[in-house]
Image 1 (tube, rainbow, N blue to C red):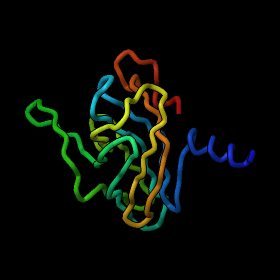
Image 2 (spheres, rainbow, N blue to C red; image 1 turned 120 degrees about the horizontal axis):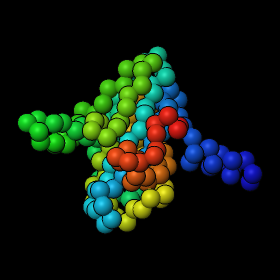
Image 3 (cartoon, one colour; image 1 turned 90 degrees about the vertical axis):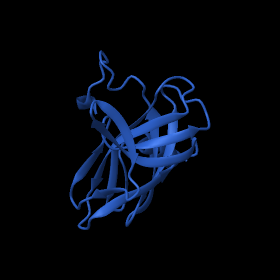
Length: 152
């Protein structure tokens, strides 16, 4: 039983990996209390010798989850669904961050607050499914926030 609790603590607090994929520093944000959408940000490291691709996502707290890119054109910010996913070259790391690629949670089925743990399943072309517990942190990356990326 002690080993089970230790494994769960590592899963929630630290990097998660399956085969050749490692997911690190994952967090989620919601736009405002009661918002119908949220976004998940993280670093994904393909530690394998073969290229892979993130092709989908799902979460029990949302009706749908999609891989999105943020684009700015003529000072207008838009999000675009990346239907073909995101390539993950062998040996490289890809940042899913604010203002860039992210996993969009649409049609949230429950209210999410700071500190909540959100299960997110990432679907890779070769590595298969990797499920991570992502903490909601609405202050992260906000101007005036004292959270620094170097804290991780």
